[in-house]
Image (cartoon, rainbow, N blue to C red; front, top):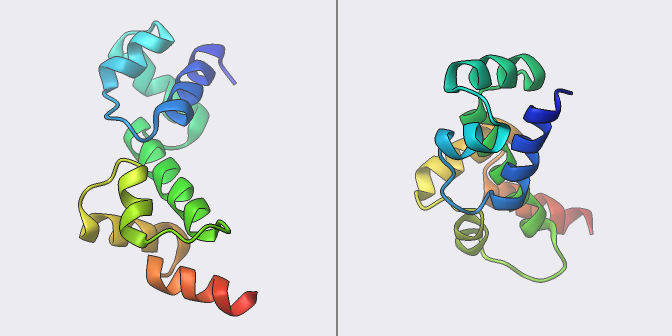
Length: 110
């Protein structure tokens, strides 16, 4: 992976709960916006915005799977998502089930 894109991915992973702009990522990678977008999509097969959203959803799923009980709202807020319908829709797109169904499935497996 291109080291500049790797730095941007590491930045996303470290700051996923914060408001991350394209400018933040291009600055981190030391690339122009157009070149950054081209390289990021080439390397990651997703746009930076979609990658960030997917990272947030995956982190929320980790919270829902954790041993410590976390509400869906707490998981959503802790990863930087404030709109519940957007969160539910995005979660379902990644995992195929709603956050509530996901958590219920985990409890059944235990």
